[in-house]
Image 1: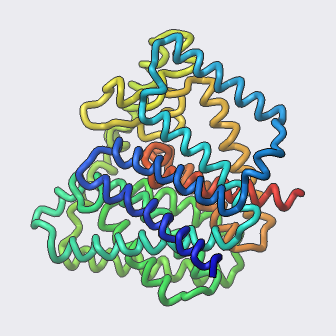
Image 2: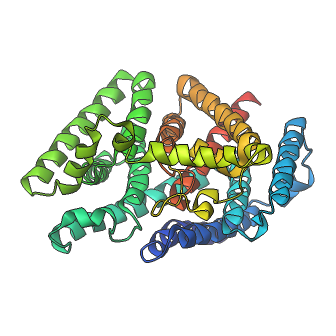
Image 3: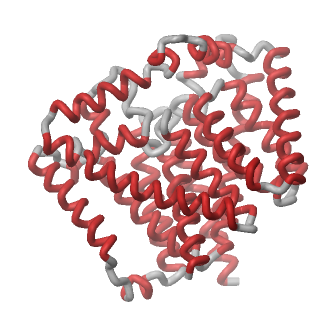
Length: 400
């Protein structure tokens, strides 16, 4: 009885964590959504910390050389910020990063001891994504204004339509996992249809890139039967979605995206991302050696006002370099490289289809992060933390 109550509380907390940042972002800036998510993540960490009595492990922690090296780099970065008079302790995004680090460490510990948490996390996330997807389709066909193109910058629920694509990316891969594992295939095919339809309708190139990379990896490592079953569903649902969109004259946003996707100018093709990256890198380099080594502090792109509309550089590595400099970028690359190696290890050697999909999802998410704010916005950052912690915990368990 006590376990059931605790699990129900955990599900409620997960639902709150997944839903509240989405609802907060409707009429507010990303600042509020990210800040809200940071506090909710810390609340989840405290709950899980107590539930699994992680304080016992905390007392036995011995800092390894690698951890000491990370701490030294962190101190050097803090020193660089202080030298530049950057009040990082008063910048909200400092707390976002702190909560992200704490969440990663807690999930790393939980993933090794509680498989049920993994299942609850995934199922709860999918429930939220599917609910949002159904709402979007109903809104498009029954409540939206005739000028559908206006929904690109002012959609319901999310601050920007791009944020819907973050949810779609992870939702497609969760549905993929359930289909190949044989769990509720009819139900999951319906979920997959809703998400593929919204991907085509919204012209989400970044989410398509991430999904294609993930599915491409699974293509090589899945059994022939699973591969055929999954790919046939994806092809049929994709064609069906496009036919419905065209027949119901809902192709305005897709046509807009395809319009600048045909451009020969790289900056235009990338929707201005190339110029944004150049601005961000140039600002850091022009500030001198200390800024180049330690960055300009959390949320540097937004604080420097490098763009009238855009508040982040739409690239995880450029974002890391601008905020944490070469030292922080080096640490980030080392962490991502280690996790990618572990992900490939699971893809090649694991018999667990769940772990294979999680591994492919992380690599696809990294591809997505090259062109969008996967490591900036609350919802995708949470999922990347979850995926990386699960992957690294699983490989550690296998090797020990």
